[in-house]
Each structure stands twice: as structure tokens, then as C-alpha cells.
Amino acid sequence: MKKTAMMLGVVLWVVVAAGVARADNSFAVDLYRQYTLREGNIFFSPYSLSSALEMAYEGARGNTASEMRSVLGLLSDEGERRERVSEEISRFNRSVEDMTEEDWIAEQQEMLEVRGQSSSDARRRAEMWMADPGIAENLRSERYELRVANALWAQEAYPFLPEYLDIVTRVYSAEARNLDFIDDPEGSRITINDWVAERTKDRIQDLLPLGSIDSLTRLVLTNAVYFKGKWAHAFEEDRTSEEVFWLDADRSVPVQMMFRSGGYEYFENDLLQVLRLPYKGPGLSMIVLLPKDRALGRLEKDISASDLKEWTAALHFEETVEVSLPRFRFEQGHEMKESLVALGMREAFDDNFADFSGMTGEREIYIDQVYHKAFIDVNEEGTEAAAATAVVMDTLGMPMMNNKVFLADHPFLFLIEDQKTGTILFMGRVMDPTK
Image 1 (cartoon, one colour):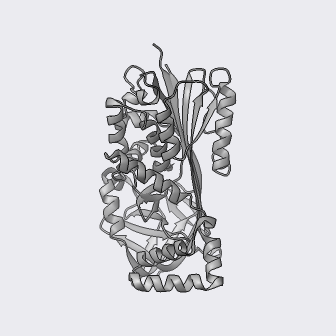
Image 2: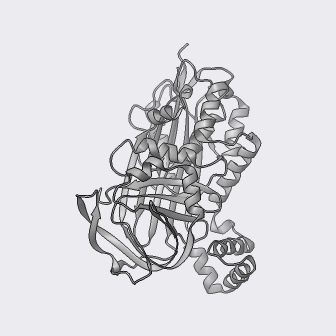
Image 3: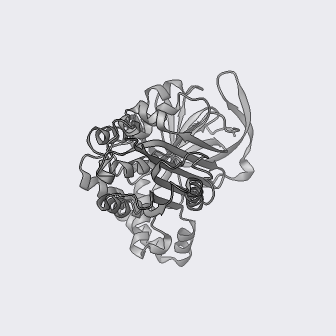
């Protein structure tokens, strides 16, 4: 019998957040290695991709589920995994209006503790800040914006199991909508793309390309992520100047290089320098990994999730770091099937072996393709990023002496992280800031 394919689409940006529902960030690093087989800049959201695929995993059974769990690095305890997923989504989507006075104090206290203050001193200072109307209003108005949205788009009247629909809507806060893929595939595609564009403030357009939805499509699972944050310490625009960025040992391009001197969390070893650039509002930051030579090859070849954990744990506050970072802005789109199969997620895409019987009670659905798009803009003020994923299922300056110098004038890796959990929301590399 011809099986129904499922499409999964994700739009994401590289931010690092703690691996709440995942055992570690191995999926992010493994997927990054797949991307390094391609040339040029890289940008994707491991969080968005894993979120969309995890909704599909809820209906997987047998070896299909085992492969997906292994590739995504999911926790083996289903109850704990789902609880953490739900908590993470709620925390990411918490708005300024939803936060109590105690929420604000706890958030500021956490930020100060990360910077090395004792719990009691951090608490005192946080309470003092929030008691001052001017400071409190500034903190509320400057906090970053982070939004996560999930949706399940099902063929109308198709017999999906109520228990599967309940898990996806309850745990993932997913909107459940019916569409007519059979008689109106193009209209359905436009509806889903419009939803993605709205959830990402139009930064992600046309996630699903022409022809990606057809009369055999039975389910589309989507995740969208949007982030906009100001640097805790902005780069001064009048200090930005045209400088050289080295593409490799011999070739260079002119770029607009931002500069700031100040206190940052920093680490270095023989291989690389690591810098944390925090955003206003505690918890989210950009991590930049800069190799000490001008080539990324050695760093990319050996990097692992445990390396990332070790390097970020070793970050320590330096009073003065001379930071030079290029402006960059780019967007990318990817079809993920080939990369996911290479990582070991084979059965989910095979119409002969895929087992998603947890969705319908029958082995009649498989993943046809996973579409992913991501956008990022880094400038003196801060960062704006967005990403979306769709899973489609068918039926059948001169530094001062002794200061640390962080001169990003050659290719580097970056990611955006949730410091509380360590989850990598977005990850990428800059090979050429002008592209």
C-alpha cells in the first residue's frame, strides 16, 4: 500500500539554550558537521529542527523511534522529557506582561550570579534595581524578545489518534488545524507559509517551496522561532570602521568591523578563543568561537558537544577585552532529509520501513522531507534572528598592553545560548561576512 508522507518544516536561528529535553547538544554539533561539507556561511537552528522532529517522534514506534531518539539525543524518560519540553516552551514565551515582581528580581539575580556575585549580594542588588522606578522601567523595556510557536496541520477527516493529537497540542502548545491537502495542496502550502511568516515577523518567507505539498500529504508539523535582543553593552557605531576580514591565509575582503573594549566572559587555549556576548535580559547570549589560526578546519574537525560544554564552563570574567566583530547578515534555506539520514535517521524517511503507527494506529505514514530556513542580522545594537522548520508527511583599534584581544578578522563559529539550560537555539559559522 502506498504510504502517506509527513513533511516537517523548521525555521531557526543560532542561539544557545540549555538542553532541557535533550541529553546534551550532540544533535547540534553532529548536524553542524554535516553542514561543514558545504562551502560558505552556515546558519541553522538545532532547537527548531529538534522541536519539529520531536513532535513527529511522539508518533514513532519501534526502530523508527529508536533511530530518532538516538539522532536527536532525547532523554530516555518520556515523562521527564515531555515535562521539560513544556516548561522550556512556557519559559521562552513568557512575556513582560506575564512576569511578576518576583520574576523580575529572580531574573536579575540570576544574571548577577552568572557574573560572579554571591547569591545574597545579587539578591540585594536585584531588589534595589526593581525598587527604583526608572531602572525597573528600563529593564522591562530593554528585555529581549523570544517567541516559539508550533503547529500541526492535518488532512481533514484523516483518522489521527486522539492521544497523539493530545500530546502534541498539550506538551508542545501546538495549534492543531485541518487543511485539505488532497483537493487544495497549493492553498494549503500558502496557508502554512503565511503562518510561518507571521510568527517570524516576515523574516522567514516561503518555507515550503512550490510542489512541496501534494495530494499525498497527510500531515505537516511546523516550528517557528523568533529572537530580537540588544547587546548588554552595545558597540558604538562611530567606532565601526572598514577593516580586512581574512577568508583564508591569502584572500581577504573589506568588512564593517565593530569594536568595543570592556568586561566580558572569556576563555582561550592553544586552539581557540571563546567570548560570551550577553543580551539585555538575563539568560541569552551569543558565544563566538575564534580559531587562533585563520582556518576553521582543525576546530570543525574535532569539535564535540563535550568540548562546547567544557569551553563555556571555563569562561571567566575579564575586566578588559578588546573585541572586534564584523557586522553580518544572511539567510539560508535547506532540505534536511539527506543530512538527517546520514546521521542515522533512516527509517523515518523510508516508506517501506517507517513506523509512525502512534499517529494513526497503522504504518501508513513516513517523512517525505524536512524544510528549514534561518535568518540572522548582527549589528552594533544587537541581534535579530528567526528560523522555521516543516516536517511534511505523505501517504504513501590598538590594544592596551595586558588586555585580552578578540579580533574576529577571520572565519569563526557562533551560537546563541540559553545560559540557564545550555540549549543551543541557533548555531552557525561566518566564512565571509559580506555574503
